Length: 443
Image (cartoon, rainbow, N blue to C red; front, top):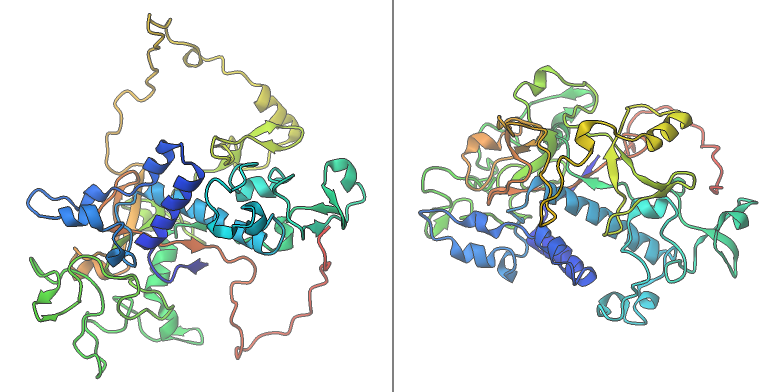
């Protein structure tokens, strides 16, 4: 897997907010739901109002990690980032209409008034399903469709003949950005590859660096603190005139020395969300390959089952429903599920509406949430500017509800590596492999 070099910064998040405001100028709800909770800086006995007003938007903090973001907001950002990166790839290669044409000559900097509104904003899943195409969308360099029956399947012809959108088989699009699993995050933080010779790990680590302490042992930087954390009560940065970690709250995302994977601040600065649901006994009940707790299998809802058309929400994203089974269903089973009608008493209207037209709601959970450790409890790791050195150990773990935020919480994105698990094989012993016999062009 891949992982971001740094935590997501304020300037990254402001770019996200700007895109929402530009594309959904009349949808205040979408913009509001994407705003970080800047009130997380408030404490009953602290004067933190300057951070409430300035931390997210002031240029002085643009390279600092975004905080006040919930687990749900972090996931939404990863989905948005996936779509924007794939859209940029397709437009730059000519598979979608380029920005200059799209904005009537104004390029990426075109005003909202000049941007074409002929389609919903780009969504990767919708595009791969063939639903994002047509007049005002298709580019000038779309791939040639070699299917003999392509004309009869609604594929768009142009001057070069019958063309088609990019498919997953073409290898053009990126894998989705996502939150790392707890196991991935811990592996990336320790970066034991730096202590590995052949198959042997020479030394373990307590922190993302070698040694038992939190100060640099090297001659030129001897004694300098290697991460942004709280050394003691009231000691967030040391003594005036000679600060120890150079940061009273968070620090810029490229502060301190990166670990052996080249990742910054895998200890300290801000805690980071992971994808996992928290359980105290997770290490006693897990899969030994890609361990992860919190799978929710979903299917994309079809608006036209025969044509395979996805149903979309008001933002042009596919609607996802909980999967009825973990395996592929037979075609007849799919038809039966689509035609099934819920005949249970709870499916009908519970009572007649009152004079205002309001209905009583159906409560299926009589007592609500009765424990803090539930399926909405998400693991976070890494330690923050307000934590002691104990929490800098990548093995430590805590949890918070996925809809809560903190001034000590940020995140970074990960991406799955497809294909061979090793990409840098130069100088390593290996068997020779014949070249692939795959077709040069996807049909």
